[in-house]
Amino acid sequence: MDNFIKYTLIRSNRKTLAIEVNAKLEVIVRSPLFATQRSIDEFVNKHSSWIKKSIEKQENRNKTRLPEPTTEEISAFKRKAKQLLPLKTSYFAGIMDVKVKSVKITSAKKRLGSCSYDGRICYSWRVMMYPERVIDYVIIHELAHIKVHNHSKSFYSLVGSYCPDYREIEKIIKGS
Image (cartoon, rainbow, N blue to C red; front, top):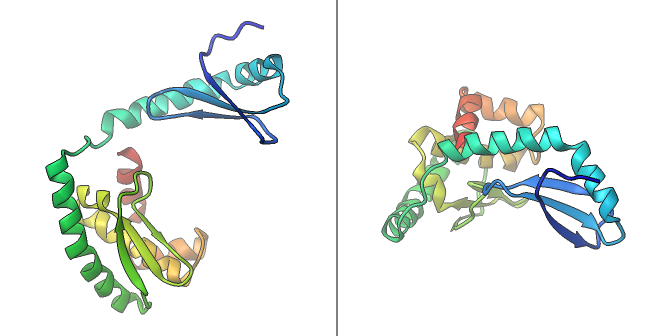
């Protein structure tokens, strides 16, 4: 079968086929060990319109993505994050009436923040690259997880009560 979409194949001990388009616009196909090349090619061809749309979306994201900071800028962002984020977290935790066990600064690339079930919050120093309203939203988002441990309607209702423009802020984050 002719396959017009160039892709990298990764075989592993998985049960299903999956396609990913990464930030470098590479098409990655993940396949079970037992899948035949023909079935993989058919799968890719069947999903070619999705792949093309995903490449287009990723190209648009790449155009608006924040530039990678220099080593000096990274150090400054980390220092600022260690000073500012625990203070802001404490401030918003008081307003939202939640208890935070700890605040940690990480170098996560794909997530700006995370919250464990027991109230430990991690922020990527990369959040400091955004405007203050985005930083505040990320803090509110993570604190809301202390009360609601998922992304349900009630979670977003809680977030919205402290950050009414959260939808616009999420677009800013997704666009970068």
